[in-house]
Length: 458
Image (cartoon, rainbow, N blue to C red; front, side, top):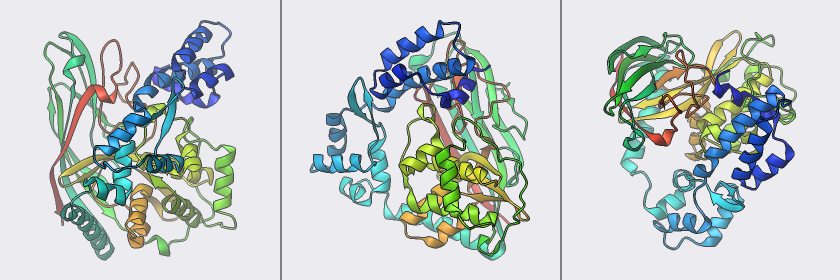
């Protein structure tokens, strides 16, 4: 078994004594007890796998929550000198600042302030760090124009070229070390065609098959000098418009892509109850899917997340906490749809807009007789923040054309798999690196992404 597969057993749960130490942030003591348990021969395999995965989670958790209260306040006051302790406490108590215990002390999420700047207009204004109006308007105008063209013409196609690099940080490099490197590239799917791998450097990188569930270029090299790894590729991305307000679904749906995938797509009692409550009295699968999308976009709040590696049951966590990011929202939507018998899949890669290429996740779902459709609950929620109901409704059934799909499955292996822990064991949007001895975390390497071309194809 690949070590990353042990994460499938997270929902087994920890023994009570280890769990209590973890909840209080006594990670060293919890890891010591895990190692004692792992020495015993009578530990069932499922529990053994859970313990191995939880040990690695606890090794990573402290770096996700580095700030003491004083340090967190200082982080905000560097930009907003009159920021009050009462404001901080109110934001925390309303779930807008994540925290956990580390060695019995409350520690705060490393990206809590970035979340506030992104989601709280008043805090962004006070910090003087809000995106310039011309930049905001250009991006909103670009997406609005794309949506309008799709509605008028039925589709919009873009030719997109991307350059993606990764390099191990010099402090981790040792001359003569072996590196295995993965960088995502565009995969064949409904939206993408004419995929051209234009540059792979160094030469010799192995390109995964076009239909790989998580498509990547893989290098295996012994390095005398540290250097970056580069891939450049181009593709056509066609976004087709569907007016889902006019669509009805058949009550009989196919049963593919409706299964659970532990630990994050599971039909817990709460998920089953929530799915039933949201669709009470509804038989049309299209309307069920819309109810789930509406629930997420109208009720949850965007927040940057800790690395997915340290999260447990992401979809149910979103349904309890009413917060998440693009991948968290996508996983909840997939889980609710599958629980209701609606086929649903993960898609991810990048938003590939002119001047900005960034990681992103969304949903592909199937409703007979219409076939595969798309939903982006994160962009839908962003439209809510901007009071743009037309745009929110667009992202149920549709996507804009500024996308790059590399991953068509959540929690899928690479064609040439990693031997050690992945930085992200569920998805690959930025890249992965490992040596002969260990897997590197995302903070251990430097990634760049650039859209070299993004033009409309008539």
